[in-house]
Amino acid sequence: MTPLEISRFTETLCRKAPVIPVLVIEDAAHAAPLAEALIAGGLPVLEVTLRTPAALDAIAAMSGVPGGIVGAGTVLTPDDVRAAQDAGAQFAVSPGATDRLLDACEAAGLPILPGAATASEAMRLLERGYGVQKFFPASAIGGAPALKALGGPLPQVRFCPTGGIDTANAADYLALDNVLCVGGSWVAPRELVQKGEWAAITGLARQAAAL
Image (cartoon, rainbow, N blue to C red; front, top):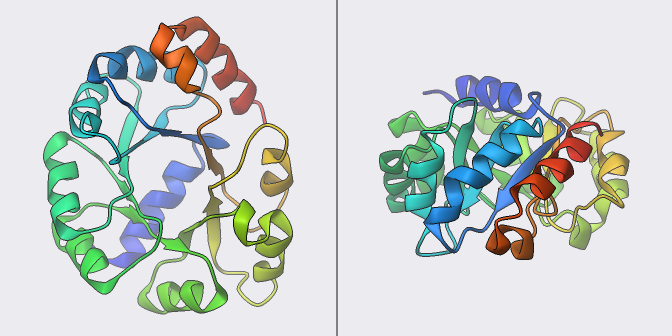
């Protein structure tokens, strides 16, 4: 899969809804009902971060939920690429990008949303063919004003910013011409997931989908 093909795929993903939920799942038993709740609220693209022992099992469970497109976040190595794909992930997300990681995703045919935090990183990814990128950690590196500034010299790059984004600032990012969507964890708070408050999560998803 070429970087251009990957970018076309990730742009399609990013245009499906204004928010991609970033999910840290500690119990795989929560995975399917959580996916159902988010999809019902209008957020079909789901990122499960590889930060817990349950993550791969959660991806496998979510992959069986109709209407969802499940990916793996915090993908850092070629081993992560293989494990995520074996679990059923349809895309990968990384906080940054290395040649080994990009080579592995291209060889495996696993679309990746690679991360960039600076103009140089964004330029390097663009030079390789990645016109759709993750902007991370968004709030810590200047937020929406920083991303708007990048749009001047790099208007051809489109971003999905994540990191410190919530209901208070999501609209600021979504108003930018170079932003396709945002990623955030506020739509699935840990306490609601642990209590199985799926209706409440659907409500949060509906609010996010309306941004």
